[in-house]
Length: 220
Ligand SMILES: *Cc1c(COP(=O)(O)O)cnc(C)c1O
Image (cartoon, rainbow, N blue to C red; front, top):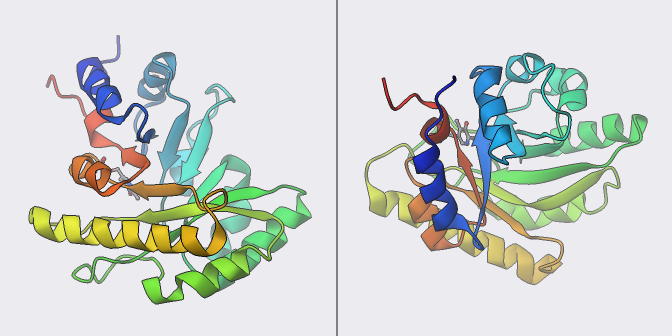
């Protein structure tokens, strides 16, 4: 039997019910674990690399795969067949290429725009908040993309005030986009991971992306 921390998941469900959806970030963990969570009712999983998606053959095909890593343009054509949602759309050239490739295969791809609001973390990808309005204006002209909202990563730090500040900025950006484009069109605020999801929920996140809390073997 593969071990999954069911008690932790029950707690997580209680904390998020009616508030936020949980995306299970499987990141190259064994298919048996993915399947065990599938059996618990999870249908949304995420990977941040093409190799993580390619190792998933044989899993139920009603799983929705979210791509949460930086998507290089030279990997777009290879990656698209595996994914149902792109949560990390972070540039105009990538949006234009996705439009072209999705139109070519006759599909519409749900996307989240990723914003980089954590000033201390220089290495992360994501758009600056200042570009949000023109970026979404562009996205809404691309018929093969279906923009759903935004994704924001918290800074890598134990300083909860710093994390809270970034998530509060994410929530403000989200509300600003809703005010411009409508709440029906901007409806996903994806913020929060295993270590910081409680802060994200308090700031109004309605999607959290949880990896280690669900997949790390807490019994060993
Ligand atoms: C890995 C990852 C997560 C999950 O992180 P955990 O700390 O394992 O919960 C969420 N979002 C992104 C973009 C990630 O790369």
